[in-house]
Image 1 (cartoon, chains in turn blue, green):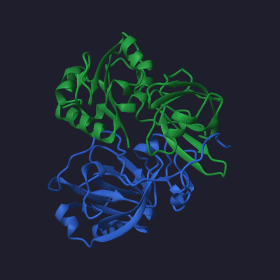
Image 2 (cartoon, chains in turn yellow, blue):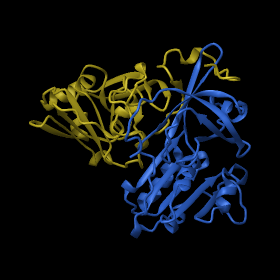
Image 3 (cartoon, one colour):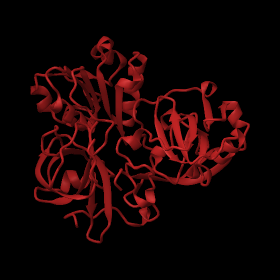
Image 4 (cartoon, one colour):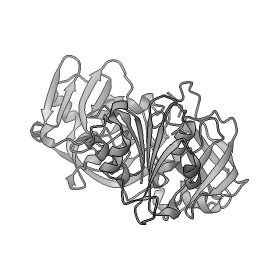
Length: 197
Length: 233
């Protein structure tokens, strides 16, 4: 259906982003509720599988090998940001260190109460990390600092800000947006925005 | 919660049936959407425009009409935007585009007896209008609205004439009798929040506005679970 009078932008810039996305140079903030303020000294992250669990503070996390990735990120509100650089600890490194079993499902919780769910395979087989630096600096609080989950191949609501807990389980439990009408998996390339996509 | 009966969210045709210039840079478009299921106050729609060569652009816009009313969006033109200039400057009655929704189960308000405090920056007033139009007389409603100057005020007549609303308008770039000048500060919020009655608080606007207001609210020891936010830009 052609929209009378609509021409749109030059076409070349958006070729490499998923369908329905546009490229922005800004870094918009989408958070359900107020920004959470946590100092690195008070931040902790617990990894658990129901039998084994391990809690990391800021120094513990920095004692693990760090990786740096440059990747595009995609928000379900239609913006994509190209070539963002993140430094942190890969989830597979973290799970190995914690000694947890790779049970099939993960529920991620944040300071402030936010939750999101995703398959463990998407955390350990791809580029997922606990990120502590963005584009060479600390991660600002409104973008999830001091530490956030980053799962760049899924819509950004899966990349929980202010991450504090990852619980592995045999049973899938849906998170905040997943129970509020958004897609359970959230693959941008398949445009899985809402529950029926 | 809205959308408890879930049906597939497909793209449907919307026809522009009403067009209101709210300000020099903002416009409300009334839409006729086939089989519109009704919406909750605060929900949004995705709008998809298609060019002659098949190129498409999609953006999300809040519904600014009340539940039970026909769907309406209110759009502020973003100068380097792609969809908003079309909606504000080009779309006319009879034009059609695609719409999907209503969407969203978080930044929504359902009728309740507790006081409601609606805090908007700029075009963030759009979803809040849906809320005050949904409001019940049992629930006192306060609107705190910040805009650059008086010419940028959207829904000004409605805010002036609706006696059920307690309205405080801040102008950040203009001084004028009857308006507060400057940004919404902690004292301004302290005046409208009565912590003893635990109001439901909705904040919508540009990121910097929402960050500032929600920080102030937390400083006032407002329970963060009572604050719902929606940011843009």
